[in-house]
Length: 115
Image 1 (cartoon, helix red, strand yellow):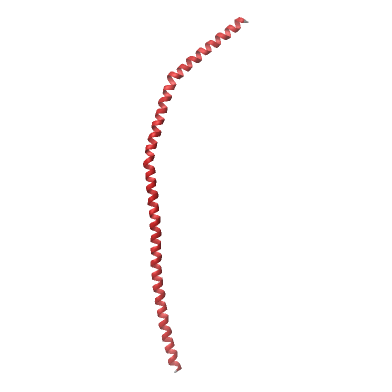
Image 2: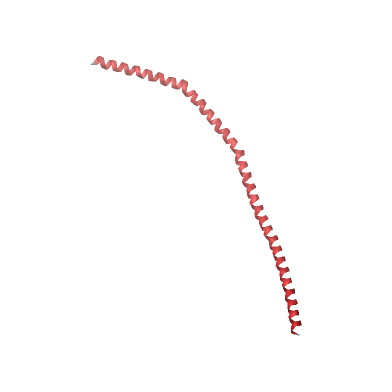
C-alpha cells in the first residue's frame, strides 16, 4: 500500500513538474505575444480615434449645411408665397375694377332704357 502511495505521489510530482514547465512555456512564449498583440490593438484603437475626429467634424459640417438649406428653403417658400399673394391681389384688384366698370356701364344702360 505504501508503495502505491509513493507511486501516486511520484506521479503527482511528475504532473506538477510538467504543469510548471507548461506554465513557464506559457509565460515565456505566449505572454510576450499577447503583450505585443495588446500593444497593436491599443495602437489601432488610437489610430481609429484619430481617424474619427475628421469624420465627426465632417458630420458636423454636413449638419450645418443641411440646417442652412432648410432655413434657405423656408425663406424661398415664404418668398414664393409672398410673390404669389401679390400676383393674386393684383389680379383680384383688376377683376374688381373691371366688375365695377361693368356695373357702371350696366347701370348707365339700364338708365338709358328706362328714359
